[in-house]
Length: 386
Picture 1 (cartoon, one colour):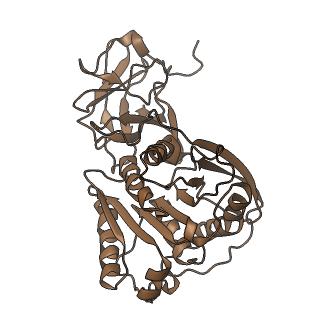
Picture 2 (spheres, helix red, strand yellow; picture 1 turned 90 degrees about the vertical axis):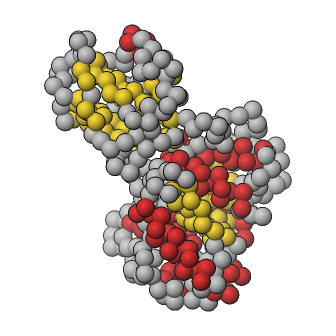
Picture 3 (cartoon, rainbow, N blue to C red; picture 1 turned 90 degrees about the horizontal axis):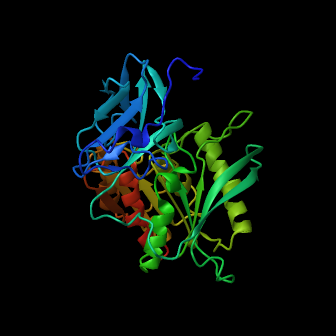
């Protein structure tokens, strides 16, 4: 007997293969779950059994997503099963949850992913003709969980570390390192669980398009018990952002260099991130060019009208010196995320006019979502350490 006023049942095969005659269960479903189902025209059908509910709605993860504007009202069947089919979705990974009489609940048919500051449901909508993030018959690297003690915060922290396929076979080799950061509301698991970064790297390395590298993914949040030391400048945050910067510089990088066979110098150290993580990347790298020489900003929350002479502690003040020191400065954004695209494009153009080379990439048709950032990584990684 259910202890709650509403019972949520994984309906699976009991409801039949509906949601379009050519629809298939999403690859992000739990084993055996028939819903969500994705049709060939990319419409997605969601179902949940909540016989005692008065109203059930589908809530995509925010307005800037590929499922459509929500919340979407679901229709109740005679059996207490609520259903809705979305318009054609943008290919890629999308967060969602149900609102059952106003209560936000996960979908029993979906795997869970940490996003929007909680464990959320997610649906994978395949992109026709695209397989750069698919699991292929190529040598695979490993994603290792590394716990370490950070003196900065006096806490234990967890990093996810990708080592390339040859890492354990080639015991004398040392490797460059990419520090890769997630966005707000996500954590260090995001780039592998949602972004499929390990498969992107596996495939690029197997094709000979990317150098074998170590990729470090850490949680982008850090706090101190006492007052935070650090002043705000343009391109530099305060509070938690300053503390995370100290963790990266004083704890994370030394731990990685002491634990893994890295090439521990700035010429072999890169950092990139998406959204919040992209802002953190620019803050950390541009104010510590003695540590990094490869920089990637994916859909970062950039300001317009910045002063090239003073931004990021004057990192851009001497264009010739910057160009000598930085091997790659890379910006990316989706064409459908105007809020991030316009400032990034403006910054890229201003830097070009000032004589500072950079690369700008636009992901066609995608918004502030994982398909944008998968494409970003796929374009960015082959340029590293060349």
